[in-house]
Image (cartoon, rainbow, N blue to C red; front, side):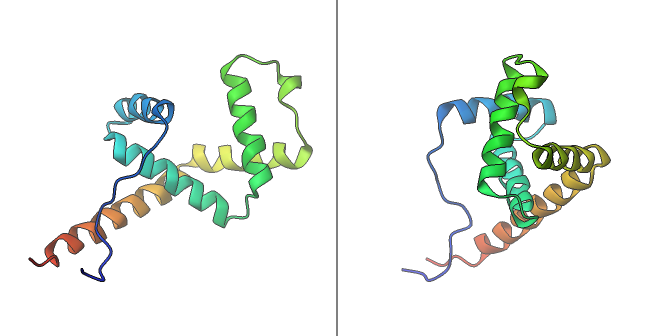
Length: 121
């Protein structure tokens, strides 16, 4: 057995998430795997920026309520979360968040490509 980490591994994901990734991937002209990687990279960036688990859950819940057409008042959680959402949206609109995630995805692909050449029989 090699002590090297494989370039790619398989993981099980909920079918709903994969379907959402497939839809988003078509719009963004990415593969499903690249879309999931992009989302994961964005999540890591937000986590490293200090987004707590409870903040993450609240943002996800807000996003899900918005998808079902919930009124704005029903989506209010806290002023801090409103500020955080505004900051994330500003980063997204400026392209900074997307650029950072794309750089991370490209770096991951480069590292994965180098790992393929090192495999031995």
